[in-house]
Amino acid sequence: MRTPCIHVCSLVSATGFCAGCGRTLQEIGSWASYSDSERRRIMALLPARLAGAAAVSNDMETGHTSGPEQVL
Image (cartoon, rainbow, N blue to C red; front, side):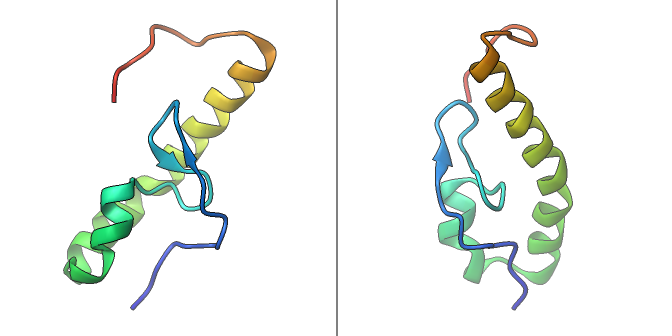
Protein backbone atom coordinates (compact mmCIF):
# COMPACT_ATOMS: atom_id res chain seq x y z
CA MET A 1 0.00 0.00 0.00
CA ARG A 2 1.36 3.40 -0.99
CA THR A 3 1.64 6.02 1.73
CA PRO A 4 2.78 9.67 1.72
CA CYS A 5 4.46 9.27 5.12
CA ILE A 6 8.06 10.53 5.19
CA HIS A 7 8.55 9.87 8.91
CA VAL A 8 8.42 13.55 9.89
CA CYS A 9 5.36 13.14 12.07
CA SER A 10 4.28 16.37 13.71
CA LEU A 11 0.85 17.98 13.57
CA VAL A 12 0.86 21.70 12.85
CA SER A 13 -1.72 23.23 15.18
CA ALA A 14 -2.42 26.17 12.84
CA THR A 15 -3.50 23.85 10.00
CA GLY A 16 -4.32 20.49 11.57
CA PHE A 17 -2.07 18.79 9.01
CA CYS A 18 1.03 16.67 9.53
CA ALA A 19 4.15 18.70 8.73
CA GLY A 20 5.67 15.72 6.92
CA CYS A 21 2.88 14.30 4.79
CA GLY A 22 0.05 16.84 4.94
CA ARG A 23 -2.60 14.43 6.20
CA THR A 24 -4.98 15.02 9.09
CA LEU A 25 -4.80 12.86 12.19
CA GLN A 26 -8.01 11.12 11.10
CA GLU A 27 -6.59 10.40 7.64
CA ILE A 28 -3.39 9.01 9.15
CA GLY A 29 -5.31 6.74 11.53
CA SER A 30 -7.73 5.52 8.87
CA TRP A 31 -5.22 5.19 6.01
CA ALA A 32 -5.14 1.37 5.99
CA SER A 33 -8.95 1.14 5.86
CA TYR A 34 -9.38 3.56 2.94
CA SER A 35 -9.94 2.25 -0.57
CA ASP A 36 -7.23 2.80 -3.18
CA SER A 37 -9.36 5.49 -4.83
CA GLU A 38 -9.85 7.32 -1.51
CA ARG A 39 -6.10 7.22 -0.81
CA ARG A 40 -5.41 8.58 -4.32
CA ARG A 41 -7.97 11.37 -3.77
CA ILE A 42 -6.31 12.39 -0.50
CA MET A 43 -2.81 12.15 -1.99
CA ALA A 44 -3.88 14.54 -4.76
CA LEU A 45 -4.72 17.14 -2.08
CA LEU A 46 -1.41 16.88 -0.21
CA PRO A 47 0.85 19.12 -2.34
CA ALA A 48 -1.53 22.08 -1.90
CA ARG A 49 -1.90 21.36 1.80
CA LEU A 50 1.85 21.25 2.31
CA ALA A 51 2.34 24.45 0.31
CA GLY A 52 -0.33 26.15 2.41
CA ALA A 53 1.22 24.84 5.61
CA ALA A 54 4.60 26.24 4.55
CA ALA A 55 3.00 29.64 3.92
CA VAL A 56 1.32 29.57 7.35
CA SER A 57 4.63 28.64 8.96
CA ASN A 58 6.46 31.48 7.17
CA ASP A 59 3.73 33.96 8.13
CA MET A 60 3.94 32.90 11.77
CA GLU A 61 7.73 33.33 11.76
CA THR A 62 7.60 36.80 10.19
CA GLY A 63 4.47 37.99 11.96
CA HIS A 64 2.60 38.46 8.67
CA THR A 65 -0.78 36.97 7.99
CA SER A 66 -2.18 36.17 4.58
CA GLY A 67 -5.81 36.73 5.47
CA PRO A 68 -8.43 35.95 8.08
CA GLU A 69 -7.89 32.88 10.20
CA GLN A 70 -10.08 29.89 9.51
CA VAL A 71 -11.21 27.46 12.15
CA LEU A 72 -10.44 23.92 11.00
